[in-house]
Image (cartoon, rainbow, N blue to C red; front, side, top):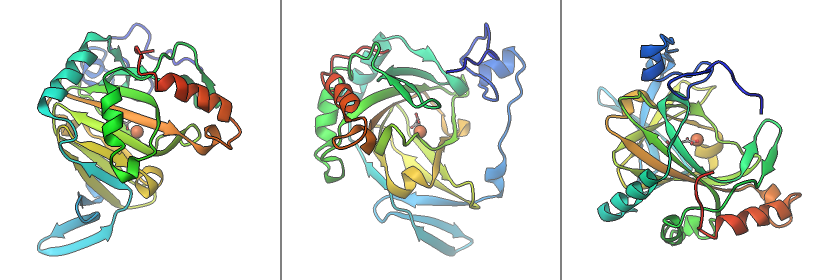
Length: 267
Ligand SMILES: O=C(O)CCC(=O)C(=O)O
Ligand SMILES: [Fe+2]
């Protein structure tokens, strides 16, 4: 991948147009404030019914918002502590927009569509039970993650993630995120629309994005929605190209074999 040298010798992991509180303060980097959300009509996602709802001066509007599944209290308080302690024993790497990350997965160049096994030792041991448990949900019955990315957000770094769609050349249908240490909000938006949908993510819950919420709506976490430290683990599965019958099924099966040993250390 072409290296971005705009961040040489910096105090944080921000490159190009991205920024966090650290480079805004010490390097004087300008924050590019996206204020489009102020002009958009905001809806709130209601989990039991799967509707996006807006109530403006007593006038209720709603539309169906498919592709979101929320499992509250997926992780117990004791388990949450154990998971975060175990992450904190590994090294966190500075990433963009004030995030820190730990990746357990293959090295991928999405632009050139190249995958290398190099250094991938599998998902971490602590994830074995979590993956078994998530598969009890019918939607995730056949979910086989090949990658786990842990992210650490903090208000002191101004951590956030800009609206984006996850890759769909390598990564498959379901994106599964376990949300730890604090409640937050995932903000969903579309380039062509004038609407936002806020999906509340309680501490210790599991979120699945699939279908329209995966492919038609971008997801983001705004700086204002990180009020305390927040850690999450996102699990991704393979796309059909890398599954049996696909052009790259061999590579896919090697990746899965490694991932599901659950002996991983961060790459
Ligand atoms: O922090 C999150 O919950 C979302 C992370 C995310 O969207 C990503 O890593 O692609
Ligand atoms: Fe994402």
